Image (cartoon, rainbow, N blue to C red; front, side):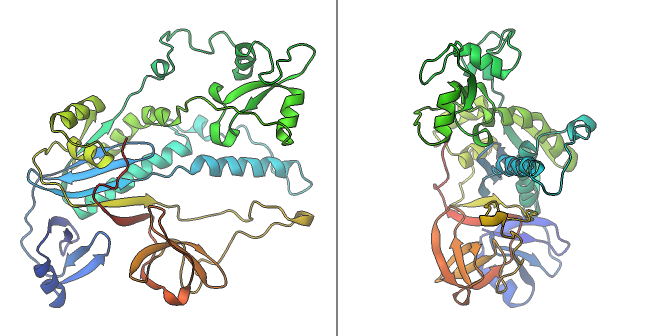
Amino acid sequence: MVYVISKNGNPIMPTKDYRKVRLLLKSKKAKVIIRTPFTIQLLTTSHCYIQNITLGVDAGSKYVGLSATTEKQELLSAELHPRNDVVKLLSDRREFRTSRRNRKTRHRKKRFNNRVHSKHKGWLAPSVEVKIWNHIQAIKYIIKLLPISKIIVETAEFDIQKLKGNIDYQHGEMYGEYNVRQYILHRDNYTCQNCGANKDVKLHVHHIESRKTGGNAPNNLITLCEHCHKEYHEGKLNLKLRRGKSYRDVSFMGIMRKTLIKRLIKMFPNIEVKETLGYITKYYREKYNIKKTHISDAFIISKNFNAKRLGENLLIVPKRRHNRKLHKSKIYKGGYRKSNQTPKYVFGYQLFDRVIYNGQEGFIFGRRSSGSFDIRKLNSEVISHSISYKKLKLIEYRKSLLIEREVCGTSSNG
């Protein structure tokens, strides 16, 4: 599929007439503006025929399905992988600031009266905000390629109390306890869950997974005595513990549900925005016997069930544009830490530039000052861990959304 932009910069209907596209490019009546997906812009005025196109969005925390369809044909299908690294980055920053306050270096005072959530109504945690923005980024990108007339978004509403097996909404699992620590000690009967000690010992609440990874959820905490806790962190004790099910993604879906719809309505006043629910998608998926994938669900959400499916998908992965971290995490002998601020360009290349090597297109995931680069595809397939920059050819400079063409059917299920 070749996507077409008019002379005025507005999207018009795409085409599969590749011969006509070649002639337009050869006669200088059009120019290529995007390589993947292949998009041209007309340089002369022509008749702009537009059909009604519906964009179905299967919203999610880890995977998002996108499908743009008319009554007869699917014009674009894509899978978006929103960023999931913000929690780790903020946790790292918090650790560095805490350790810096305890060292004899420049002091950063603790600040309690400037919390953003107390000043701005509707404030969302950065980890939630970035995922909502990734949804909007992908939708905006598709609207630039196709004349979308309607957007239908599937949102989900989960009952965490039911998922936990506790239906008593008035008395949750921590009802009657002062805080999480008190609840964990009471739940474990004030007994070390390793050695069984419960008298004349100091009890600690231990994170099964690190706080950075698992947070302070009750199913990630367990009671240990002071001795066992110390031995575990010294590597002398091996605890075979597994945390309970994480509800982080479920919580995100509940938070973003209304926010995403409201923002889309505000951002695209000329496009009809509707909401649908998961059970409706499931009904039509079973009715038309369609295999469950995120892209297939988005196709169903668009409600053009008789449209001919497209033979290829796009994989969209957003990447951050800036890294303000001054030093690397590892501290060397004498308290020395290497600078994290590498030059923007190394031998003319920057991170996530699209390049070609040996006939294969990939992205730069790592650079070395020696000129040896790490080239991979967005699906984590390694093209080369170490290849000289002299053997690479630049195709496209990096963008905030990295896009790669995939064979239909390779998208993740679930």
